[in-house]
Image 1 (cartoon, rainbow, N blue to C red):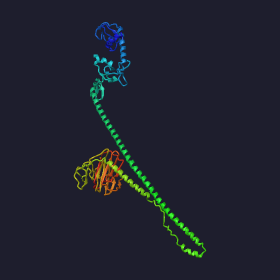
Image 2 (image 1 turned 180 degrees about the horizontal axis):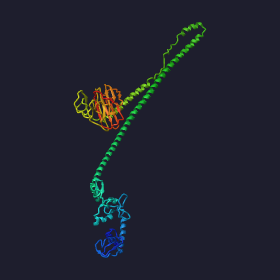
Image 3 (image 1 turned 90 degrees about the vertical axis):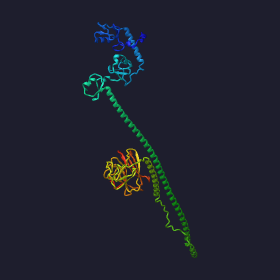
Image 4 (image 1 turned 45 degrees about the vertical axis):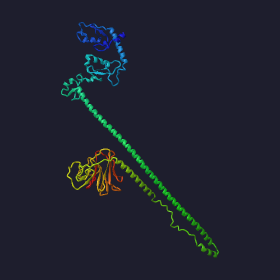
Length: 533
């Protein structure tokens, strides 16, 4: 019996009404078999009694009896199919968390391959078979498996949501379009889907662009950190070298000072010892003479005293010690040592400034003057590298960028990040202004120059009066008149420094600046005086 059942196909054990393996199979007079419950329900709904397969009509409803043979074969087939399904369930995808299960599976539920929008159920490979083979089921709409198929039905009209209302941005059924959404812009679900998918694609592209920008920003920041670390390591190395040299100089100067003082003390001691020996020698001679005088003064022999007195008057020579002093002089020793150390520190400082200047000079940029910003009494060279003041007022367009009162001009180049450096030749000039300004400065009338107004400048007035236009202004004491001035800006650090290039000396630095706009190099050959606030 079991061997015979294995030769039968699955279709021979399926009820054509419920499309499942027979349950209590019965045979009707025409020879076709059905589940007892299925054919009974079919005949209860349809009069007269008719075979669903061959359409033979029975005037008298046949008496239904279970076909024991087919029932046994169906039971064996069902058991065999379940064992087969159980043994191959590992090969046929068992549903996992987050996946859609087959609604028709009993026992171990398999992963659904498709969902039917007509049946409102999801099917695995086995239970999907009828939808792929039977003519009536082939017309059903299959989609990729989804949960909550009821959610694809209109809750108001119990119809499939197959349209999209662009006006209300909701999915609707056919009845909705003639009732609640009659005047709205309604399109097929596919068209709405494609439109939204295009929007999502655009949004995704924008998101990816934002992600890319942020990744580039991260790379930029990482690079900045690397450069900062390199700069920090370099500064530490230079600092250690300089301070090691200074420490050695201090220790050497200290040792030399101690040696000098000790040497002077030794010389003083040797001099005093020599004087003491000499004094002791004179004391010895004087004691000897004192003894002779005392002995002679005790003599009662008149002749002997008179004869010896003459030779006694020839006293041994002695030194006049009144002006002789042992005076150790240490005054000025420490001061001279500190002065010498100061000279050493100055040399080290000069070397350090030379290194610093060379370092900032690597950020040198080419700067040309912008004629659209030049005051009408300024003449620019053809190459835009030089500017001078004349008494003739040129008839130029008074654009918003042009200075009209103070003889000033800006560079064409602007900077909004990083570092830059430029050098300006000021040889032979008795007055000038130099620095950087922010883009939004006032360029009309008298100009109050200060960092608060967007100006970071130094100036020369009356040949040798140098000032930094801070608040309040800072008078600068320079050892020599600069012939060439270097201007260095570190935008992120908020630093503007001015250097005497030839002397490799720092003139002045604005620190702690907060830059939020473009910065332009600023120049003025100075006719008249720009007002300082």
